[in-house]
Length: 306
Length: 309
Image 1 (tube, rainbow over the protein chains, first blue to last red):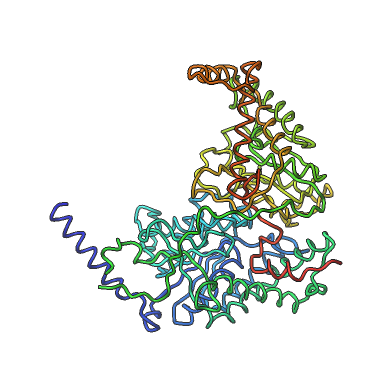
Image 2: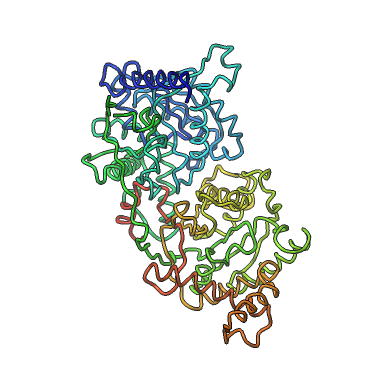
């Protein structure tokens, strides 16, 4: 290594560590935080990460939600157009409950992202990264297995790429012309509901690779639950699909004998409570959420962290 | 300097690799119909293939259909059209040996599927799911790592989406014009090569009997166009002879018959290995997604509270 490159490396390391020293400070620092959540559909981010996001927003961070699809498939007895309209309203109400400042719906048709260019999707998300300049991003975990809704995979992959590309000036030069400068988001949370049986396995390297992280959501669980219950169209669809499956196989669920707002709300509560319980297993928490986390500390070798 | 850490970071150790997998039985059948959806003619019957489960379902009275998504034109010693025709013919013979009722070939061009629209393959599969209303779909694992075969990757993703999107009325609403109603596939059995290490870890084992393995082994070499080579049988026997060894069972067989016999032994060995690792005689490994998989927070509740009508 030349003297120049040694000095450059030392300067970079010093700057990085000074930058890092500002992380993890309590409430007053959160006022400068901006949280960008990217979600494929209206419900996934709430069920997987709603409590953690609500806590950050409660602590003063500004929240921005980018919802990629229009959820037009997920209903029972409604047209795609009516489903999309209702779910848009309901997703905005849910986001308001969690404390988001702004919600953007990109309007892609649900379940059709396999036919969308990954580069196009990346650049749509990249736009919002440069616009909002988040300090924290939440994205669907594209590495999670057993997640049947592959829209989450496509969005996660595009968002991960967007986070990297947003920091480099040779991506989307026209954005710079119109005032959207490059931006690097230091903290990244990969979220997924607990489908993947190997989700808690540590990754191969302690640095450079996102690692499992479990966070307490006891203080914001009620907000998460109310946000999940606000998605009335999706929840009604879930209840009816479960009821239909049971009836077609000669069974019934007493809770769903009458599918109404109360019974659907109860079903959602059972779901959300259990998800929080699953994430809290083997921890001291009673309600939690699980992530794979790539913070700044994962971007420098561990030998420099002490 | 120490980095402040604001929350608990849990680095949990991996589960022991040698742990036995749970043994799953065939699920309760409603339509008692299953679809096997593979890119290639021979994907059902090889060391990591699901042919044993197929025969088990057939033995239990289920009806199965095989969807061959590609045209297999590259696989074999002939030119494109000849390979396509021979491989399809042999796929019918091999799946008939397993008890499959019919073969439907979607005929997408083998190993040129990258430009094939994902949503178009998926749409064809959704239509056939709605027609046959299977309780079980068997295919490749949609989230598999290290699978170098591009058709496996392409088809498994299309299947992975089709099995749940087929349950939404707003997906391909035109199917209703033919009288087909939405149908979410409740049980999925996915496979992949199980010697890819951490790239793929199955979560369940299906127990097989000798009859299941025997039919699987025969279906393996019934794909003669790609499996059987007289020269290979001759070479293997010469190798044995060079070392003054002999296998009595191979005596009086032609070179091709000897090759087929050795392939059958290989299939038995694979099923026996899975069995011995899991406390049974013969087995096949799967990634199994059950009825309530889409709602992990409701799985226990539904299992405990659903009652007979």
